[in-house]
Image (tube, rainbow, N blue to C red):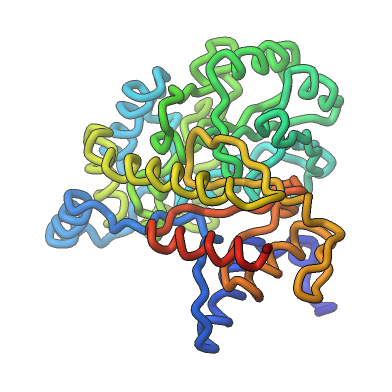
Length: 394
């Protein structure tokens, strides 16, 4: 242990992966655990995308790919950005990576120095703060609660900015809360950021297509912020391609060039077959994946209806992604079946051990009052899981 670097010792274990591992352990003991902890669609990758991958294999795509991605894929990404987001990017502004997580890590590594500050509107995705730590920056959390629909205000943003602030990370549709910042809300936050030209903006839009009626808006579409916004996206969530590991950025050319340099020393280019399949995914109309979004919406209504029947659980109405983030603080300090629930971590562990349902503590997302429940699971599993939770809390 002593021989390990301070860098790795300062890095927390991913709470979502840790909970999934605990659930697997119980499953291996023969316990019927329902996993609602991972953010992974339970659909298969659409056939038309799989066909493109098979074609790429048969066309002998088996050599190293360019570090920043195939030109044809970068062209497809530029077209997608223009079509879906109203943002113009050139080929020199696109970098394709091994998942959006690598895209985010690249950006942090090339922009942040020791002592720089990263603003994280909470709740935020678990890896943002860990990646900032790895880049030797410090994270400043801007809190929100279920009462503010898990959104921060321009006043809060202004108050959190210091002379050390270098980067802010937004994520809409949001993991874990499912909220979506509207265009008006982003423009109001943008007005604050316009006053601070040295602050960069990372906009993680991986869930953009999984929304239920609120129009998605990209911060980079605000002309005054375009030159310092990095738009991160990928195919994992909307196209059910989590294991294909393709993410990408659209960014100012000098940032893209730096990310390309960073990636060239760490992983080089992303998987060649997955890249060819992604061209097909991005060129297809969004209507080809609408069936998955429609099913997620049905599950959202189902899980909200079922959770609303459990006393002490408070919910907001998630507008996108496939998570609910209920406030469970009503149970803190209470003793259930001989176990005292001190906080959200205790609560999530109690649900795993007593109800055999895997969720994730909100502590990992910067909000200790909540737990994250993924509804990327079948309707039958959702019904069974929430039934077990209700029983365990009765």
